[in-house]
Length: 83
Length: 155
Image 1 (cartoon, each protein chain N blue to C red):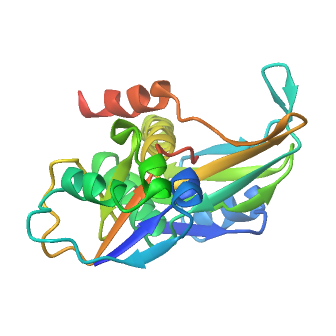
Image 2 (tube, rainbow over the protein chains, first blue to last red):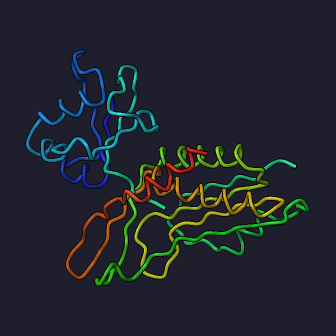
């Protein structure tokens, strides 16, 4: 699945997007955050406070316990400051 | 007459008068137009802001704004809605966002405009970076905006 990062999450991870293939044991958004955090220091830094990370699956906001199966695109970003 | 919904995300500035004309042109059923424009401030607390840069998640921003516009149209008797959100680098005094609502009577237009702004602030995927004398940093979201959006779900 494609993962996209925005704002300071993108800056810390060091890339805007990538394709990832998490194992089947990674079932929810929360699981994915924990799995991504283990990929390296930059990821750990980006996801060090999971509570402030927001997620969207296929362009719609989702809660941390949402299942990721079937998602084409998952995005992670800080709370929004638009408007 | 069908409702007129216009949603645009763009780097260029917008002309409020022209957008209002586009919303009202050729219609005789509009008695009220409410306009909100968000403007880049030059001061944050005691510090000067040199510029704001707005990043966004393009596909989601359009989808999310469209969802909010649709919700507004179904909740209030509106003849039209326009939302324009700028992205890119914006300097103090410049426009950032425009919300226009039109209806037969003013209550719907006022309420829908406030609803749309509260929801835009809380849910639209844009992120602001502030350039100040002390450096450039991401603006923090305010709980106040989440609370403002939440109050629309109680009624």
